[in-house]
Each structure stands twice: as structure tokens, then as C-alpha cells.
Length: 184
Image (cartoon, rainbow, N blue to C red; front, side):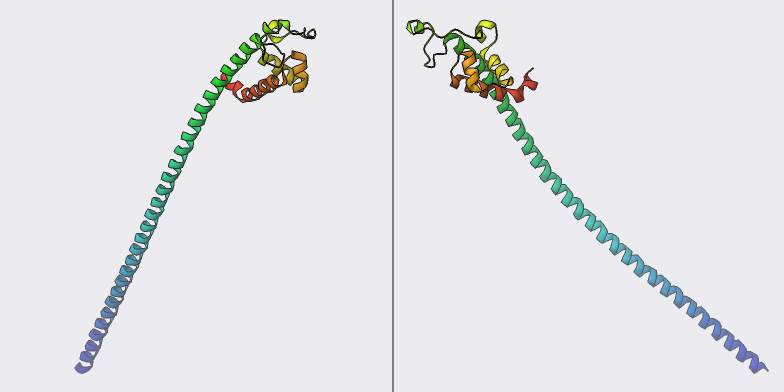
């Protein structure tokens, strides 16, 4: 009987050792699996961080390029504003010169001063007073008549001015229209 008890004890010990071995083996496999999963996660995280860094670098480069382009566009816009300001000043000077010329020259088409035209045949009587006589500038009078829908030939006839002078004044009026909101 003792042998049976010893055999049972031996088998029980051997079974216990085998059970502990299997349990430790499973725990070691679980730990190894966890380490593999952890290393895979670390690798995935490292790749994601690298991709995020690349995306951030590309975004920074794109923003730098766009900022440069925007600065170029702003510089060009500033240049154009300066040019428009210069043109507006010249337009005002031209309007003043046109008014001065209309006071000194008549509408005989040849650019002869009215004082020199005394010997010339008398002009037909004016249907409407000349802009200088009525207090309006030639520029304003031509603009007003053009706004009423008169053609350049009709404006020239009504104001007793040359067609070329009317054409120039109409060009001035058209160039002044976009700038009127900013100058007044």
C-alpha cells in the first residue's frame, strides 16, 4: 500500500509540476505576445508620428509659398494703387488744363485764340451758354450732356466745341468715373 501511496504522491507531484509548467508557459507566451503587440504599437506610433511630421512640414512649406505669393500680390496691388493715385492726380491736372484751354481758345477747330479770331467771320449765335459763361467747367458740361444721351457730335454742336476736344473730355469723364467714389 505504501507503494500505491508513493505512486499517487509521485503522480500528484508530477501533475502539479506539469500544471505549474503549463501555467508558466502560458504566462510567458502572454508576456511575449504583449511585448510583440507593444513593439508593433510603438512601431505604428513611430510611423504615425513620422507621417504627421511630414504632413506638418509640407503644410509649413505650402503656407510659406502661399505667404510669399500673397505678399507679391499685395506688393503689386500697392503699386497699382500708387499708379491709380498718380493717374487721378494727372486726370485732375488734365481737367484743369482743359478748363484753362477752353477759357483761352474758342471753338474754331484750329486752335486760334478768340482774340486772334476777331478778324474771322462771326460764329452763329449760341443756342446754349458756354460752360465757362454759365459757371460750369467744360468737363462737367460735357459729362452732363453725355449723361443725357447725346452723341459726341451733338455735344460738340451744342457746346460749340471741336469734336476732338469733346472726345478727349469724354475719355476724361470715363476715366474719372471709377475714381469718383474715392476722391469725394
